[in-house]
Image (cartoon, rainbow, N blue to C red; front, side, top):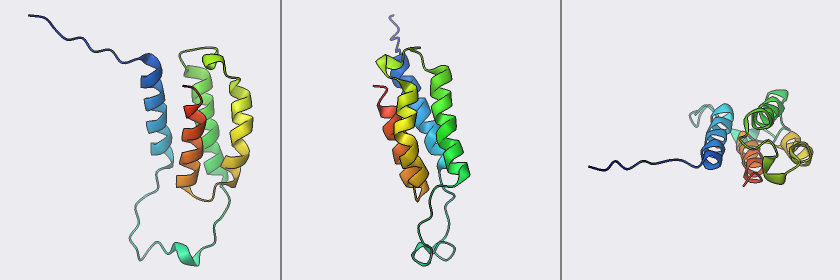
Length: 107
């Protein structure tokens, strides 16, 4: 009897894990339609907590990514490029998209 051994490519596993962690960290709590009236509220820039989430994801990759050379990327430059967009994010969904775009550069 032969056993099938499945291995997950470390990079894909790490990226999947980071995307899941980033999404979970900023996933909004589901609110009922009565509680959530976004039409009455103007779009606000990112809060310090949002920026903190961005920074935490960036630091986690810096400290734990399997390739110390980040696949040839200047990881600090990637942070500098995406930070202004993260600071201007007006929703958690927009921030999640920016973080995922940043993580996708590691491919």
